[in-house]
Image (cartoon, rainbow, N blue to C red; front, top):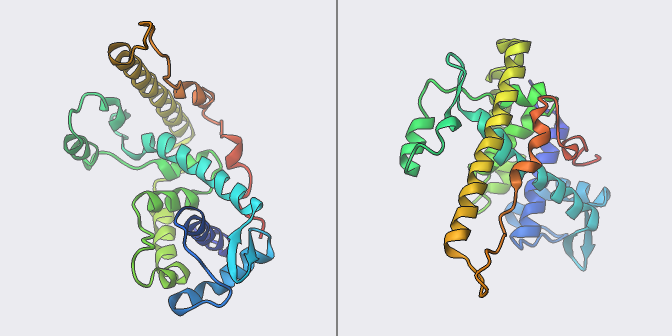
Length: 253
């Protein structure tokens, strides 16, 4: 699967918006040093209304902030929802996360889930749900800090083809829905969603128990502050369900 020019432009733009919004990086209309290679992208964002210019500095507009917020909704859901499908034993039909509460330490958990018997089905699930698989890989790269904007020359890396070719290669070589069969992938999607909701409910139960043990107010009444995140994911019991914010194009180029 080839990454489109739009994909590359979109993902690079997310990196730039993040730099301006969350990391207080300043880009000026007269770019210096390594920033010069970013000019075509910044100008494109300006032309489409995602950026404006204040004095000689690029600023994120309301549209730019809304676009970035929509991406972050996707990204946060990716970290929660799609991680379930990262480690699946296809032979046994077993999810590594089914043992999530049985492992005591982070080191033990990392060792367990990285067993070679587990396969990564995130691309297959994305394709099944009609989500751009390249965006899923891009998000996994973000989670692993593959775009290290503190490193010298990161701007050149962003406009160079190497990292995009790596994402492309992962998309091309990943397990696809057709490799599993229609019934199998649908069943895996259902199982994963049910497992996630089960894990979230158990986490909520434990948080509530902690509050009951530790967080009483002055009248001795338990303060209920547990957020029931599990209810948010209940629509995912339907294997074909996708949150609406995945259906909106991030940028209109």
